[in-house]
Length: 259
Image (cartoon, rainbow, N blue to C red; front, side, top):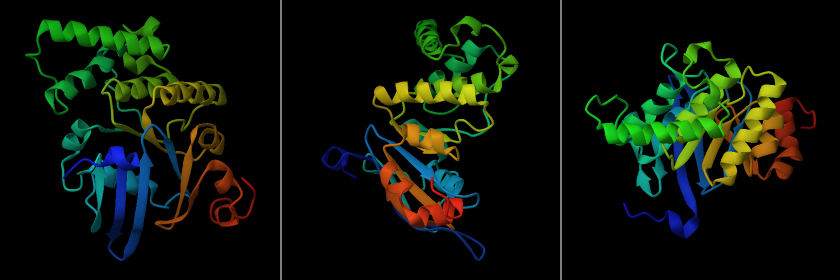
């Protein structure tokens, strides 16, 4: 398929996606367009279908109907590692790190995997490639404030630092779009604020992001646009100000209270 993303500035296009589990409509007629360089938040109560939608995007789940396209190329039906290699990278809610390995080595592994075209460590990667990847990993760790502990085991890190490490592991893959599932879940407020600052710095680099998040402070600090899911349907979409003032969103998401 011809790449037409430069014409309409859309990086990720989710079109008429439906997912059912038995008789349950987990997602119904989902249509979303994610613009290049923007941060698009997806919010909604538990069970609204947010994680299901991300699983459709990354190929863990094939929808009953509908398509997901990245830069005009259909991703639906591709394997997860093929979608990752195409440039769609997901950072999960629970940090997926290698606790017995060093922080530096954790940062290097996804960069190796990206070069190899799948998530596996290639023992035959040349020393020159390894040195280049190590230098890039150290640079990312510096940006993320983790370079001083780069030789420590990743398992010894605080929860907030583990989340930052995994964000770095996503960015070192040079994603076309970064999907973030609850990036501040379980964090203390000071760690949440540090992560907001980090995500804002990523935004300044022009990285396109989709964020699932329950913390409205995080959402309104970062999002350019917000889509609201409830019972598997998008009930509202717009700018943060539009969403904040939408009575339908207040009713469905916060029981009528103002956001």
